[in-house]
Length: 316
Image (tube, rainbow, N blue to C red; front, top):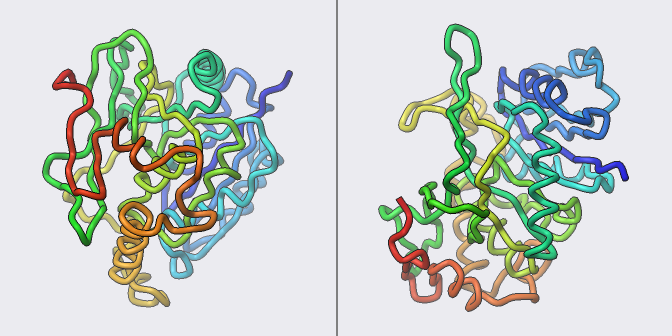
């Protein structure tokens, strides 16, 4: 059976987009089974460059001027709309490096997890890579620990703000770890995820991953943090202003909705999802599991604004 993979990529003024596309194809065991959904938020339409790629027929390309975009969640919802029944979903950022045979490795991990869950999701924050003398150098990934995503201690939920910060912490283990949070920059699951957990276009940036994780969980999906991650991420420096941030630059002043409004709207939407009526509809909670069950798994109690550690201090 041919196992096709739908790669969802939302790019914003990213010079690494074509590096990512080419690297994914060059290092795949079965590049012919890949289908790319590229939402390119760029001042220039790059359709001609896409058409020149040897795998151009596998790329579904949408160009949007940065002035017309409403943030990463909105862009990823557009990418999801390009899904066409592929067997698997891989959502990534547009500045990624791949290991050789990354597709076979992810499929093998997913098949093994199917013995533990009917609907597994493989997700965590990928290890970084950097360019050294122009050559991409990935951080060593030894596979002795899983990167478990947990709330950052500096930010707790409050009665009027459910948005949390998350960080990756190591857990020494020999198998993938059941978790409560996803990385929007590395998420691998059956293709049905696209239809069962559609991207909420009314979110902006903060809270995007919380929404995905809780909505997936309450719809019966199980999140697993893997030991081996066959993709790497080019991270920005924290606290540095970048023109490639959606809220930065001249475009911000010309948009119909300013980033401050979009952030506040997203916060209120997340509050309603996690601490209100559950946001009835496609972008709300599912009915397979409850928020009480999520609290028992995660230690995150949105109703009472408390966080406990279900790993009993074993994370490092």
